[in-house]
Length: 79
Image 1 (cartoon, rainbow, N blue to C red):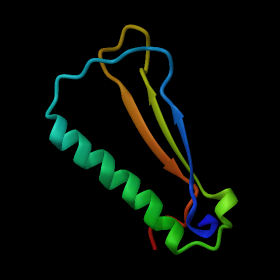
Image 2: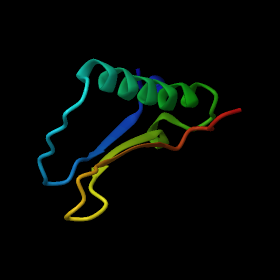
Image 3: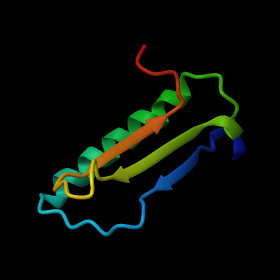
Image 4: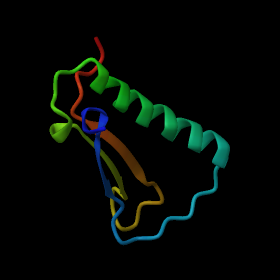
């Protein structure tokens, strides 16, 4: 159903990342962030064709041991 559609963009780059972490906790955090983004559309008047969630994975610098994960949506935000 188009009225419930959301465009999801993945920007994962070309690098392969290896994480030493609790995979269950990481999955829960990711699901919570995505669900928050999706729920923001329930309160918005955006047409389905304009609803967008972007998942971006990057490294702050080539030598950094850290990675940055961003979940960005264009929903209404916290109200």
